[in-house]
Length: 493
Image 1 (cartoon, rainbow, N blue to C red):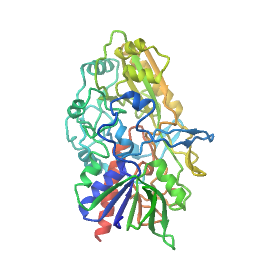
Image 2 (image 1 turned 45 degrees about the vertical axis):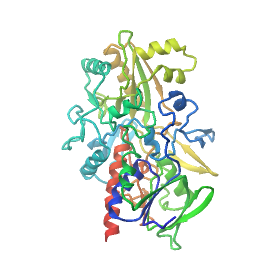
Image 3 (image 1 turned 90 degrees about the vertical axis):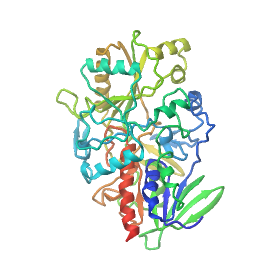
Image 4 (image 1 turned 135 degrees about the vertical axis):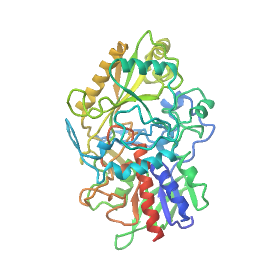
């Protein structure tokens, strides 16, 4: 491999966005991605190949807190986990950057306020071609620029559900989405939440980030390249070598700048395996993953013949429980739970009943903030990743689910069922290489630079000091653009 000025490890939301930011500099940029591109003929719209014996999920195993192996919901391909995400590109609320008190503890303040990141959110929304509006969410941060595109419209059943919920006393807001709905539906009549994109309408970390970066001939994407170790110089100050495996052979790159964006779990594991960037003993700590539940609301009078449904959310309980209590979290529609998906999730359910339920139901996703805890962590157990996730703030999540159930019943859905997601679905993983202004209690500084190695930057969800209670993808992209600007200034000096 030719030597790189900048080596980016990972092509997910952080790495891809960083590459797009740096490509115009003319610097020699190489992106190492351990996976491959999802092929055009992949079974991308087949729920049985996605939700059962997945054609996309990694075959690796991690260990849980008890040392028992499990298969995590992690994806290694060009675009990372974003290839299967729900494309919700929502900003953290302005208050999420301040200290927020919860029943179970305090979500700490970031090392900078919302105003610092707001311009980068706007740039990220442009890069990912977000569809949305600024008017329907009362928690929307003030002073934001308009979204680049109008929102994805509600199909008639979703418009009816939105009106019912408004009548029950909450204000549904339009979700900001990275989906060109016409292109998506032209390739198949499905929703997009959980279905992998084969470059047909979802704005993810392949179709937007690398696509912009690879338009420049100074950028190279190397797939099938699994990084094994980062090697520091003799004085320990700079990372001088990156060791990786490709096609069964060990190769070594010697870049000027290294940007690690392998995902919160794998970035932490690589640093631990390499013995670098951890003078604070914070690498792997403060793992956060959101407390999340799926809910299905059933009304025999309601006919859901929608193809896609993930178009609105509810933030009525984001900053309080509605009765003077502490924050509970965010609610948003899930992608359409079709009869096949219901049958996969509940194998004993007769298919005729699965069809009836799906036809008369609507599906929601409730998210509550997971608070940072140093003992909730990623460690290495021999050669394996061990994920020791200590849930926090569960009482608030249980109240959020109860509030949503009460509201759905008031909106005319008499039967509401819920299921808590477990730790095998680390889709919102964050916090393991956290950002801060104190090198004794963080891994990177407020610019995303390692305190220990000036030429090492972290650019994935691992740097997030808090999980908030919304999807992290846009915040990761905004931070990556901001870090890219810092690197650009440095290499130009």
